[in-house]
Amino acid sequence: MQALAEKNNPLAIEGNNTAIADAKVLLTKLEERTKSLTERVASLETNLYRSKAAALGFRNPSIRPISLAAQPPQQFVFNYPISGENHLELRILQITNDAIVVEVTGTAPNSQVKAVKIAQPLKVGISIELTQGIRMEGMPHIFMTVLEMPSKDTAIIAVGAKELAQS
Image 1: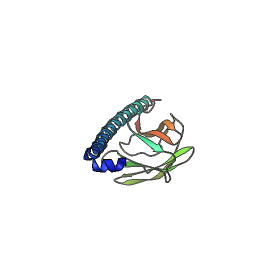
Image 2: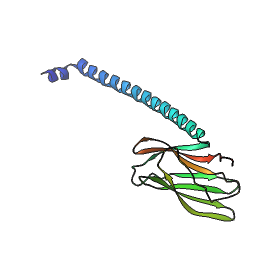
Image 3: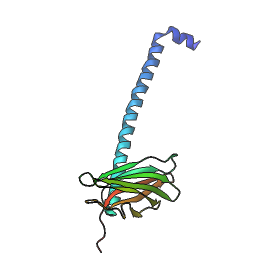
Image 4: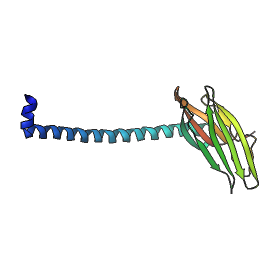
């Protein structure tokens, strides 16, 4: 009976339509605020990880979250221009329970670096030099460090040039 009364009552239908429109507007506003908060949190996290990386000696590193559970593993390629036509490429090949396996290749006008595989332990704070044994003119020492593991399936890594300790 009530449905029949609403069918015959255009004010009831208009009221329902207004309520739906109001709910959509509120939902849109909520989504905008949530997105804004998510962006702020991401910015704060990035600054936190940058300060952790700086404390470990990194100069302007690339900070990336890595999914440890993704199958196949996430594909990340880091390109580093060195000087002139020289460049270095770092590619994540595999993620195991214990390590992130990285392949390092590079090119220079008169030579090419053969692929070198390096395993970065999945332990927070341990830095591995990815460019160890590879030398090109103007090439910095490139390191990778796991900065944090916020969950069992995620690692936050820093990749970049790092100050070497003077001996």
